[in-house]
Length: 292
Ligand code: GDP
Ligand code: GDP
Ligand code: MG
Image (tube, rainbow, N blue to C red; front, side, top):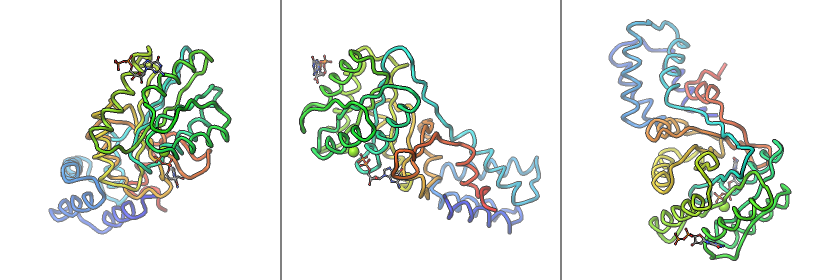
């Protein structure tokens, strides 16, 4: 994981004395690692300040120092699932990031934890999306609420909430479209779903909005977080394809810029490949501390 950047940072720390060049090169390296110019400058500045007082001697001292600086920019998130009343998870993200797969994994996980789970097929933009979710529902063994291709996603969600309340289900996982004819349509559709959920009496404690991001996308993840955060206020991220994570720096930027924590990471294609985000493991890997 993060092989490139972590090992480069580690190698850089092993050969440098802390002169003026060091801070400039550190900044360049952080930018190459997808942390962005502003954050790179900020981190390099903090290292400069800390180095004066703590006088790091070894490569490891420097790795730990950068980790401690990044620690307050990246956070985990554990969703609380209320035992009274249904909790709605709205799963958002652009096409192909892994929304539908993540929903199947979460359904499997939450069922194992003893919850009754319902899927809502609110990606009505593509017929294949509804079929795909239905196959997952059968495999995982949970119910699904769906309507015809092209129907109003708000209406699917309305039906799902009504149905889950009637059956006493604990969790609804809502699949959504990742693309519309244009951005405005997508934002309007998602805002409408959000409105329907609230209008059906789902309060903040029973409502989680997760953005799915492909771990390998880098800078694009930042504009995606920005876009979806405009439509609904995001609670947390799900990082898919974490098994091939190569662009960790961009995730730090998302944490810093939008103050969005990370709930889960997807590490493969089976239902068991979904895990709570481990902040320490992520940061160790980012600064190369996981390498022997
Ligand atoms: P959606 O368009 O956002 O609903 O994306 P899908 O759930 O259909 O997934 C798109 C592709 O990514 C599929 O081929 C999935 O098998 C794959 N995928 C999704 N999550 C993961 C993951 O965590 N790891 C890996 N390796 N592949 C994933
Ligand atoms: P609006 O504020 O005038 O759009 O009305 P609502 O907030 O009551 O409804 C918003 C959306 O919820 C509608 O466009 C429908 O998709 C859905 N909706 C409202 N009432 C019903 C209903 O009785 N059945 C179903 N299936 N959907 C409904
Ligand atoms: Mg999908």
